[in-house]
Image 1 (cartoon, rainbow, N blue to C red):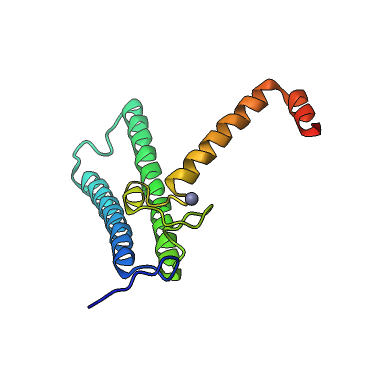
Image 2: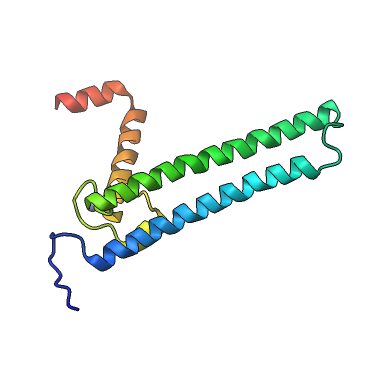
Length: 150
Ligand SMILES: [Zn+2]
């Protein structure tokens, strides 16, 4: 089997497979951890002998715990949505390319940040620009106004 590399052409098969693997793995991890959580909560509720005889302080502490668990599950659900979107973009052939310059985002970067939309260079340039903007804002709007006039 021979694969010809065409720069700027359709995504290389190996890269596609690798990116899909990264996203699928993430998705599986999240689904598993949420299922484990739900199972934990159920077993706890069924087997806990103290359940139902908690005093007010204990039960509010349990409520806080429940809230935290819920927030975590919700956060994971949102991540799951992002993964689904990324998989859809992968099918369209738009995933893994820099939003700014159109270059391929490295697999290494995507493995660490699966939802990165910019390559490392563009992200750094953007951060530098944002820092500069913050500095300008600190100098005050009057100065900015004068800069714009010049
Ligand atoms: Zn870029």
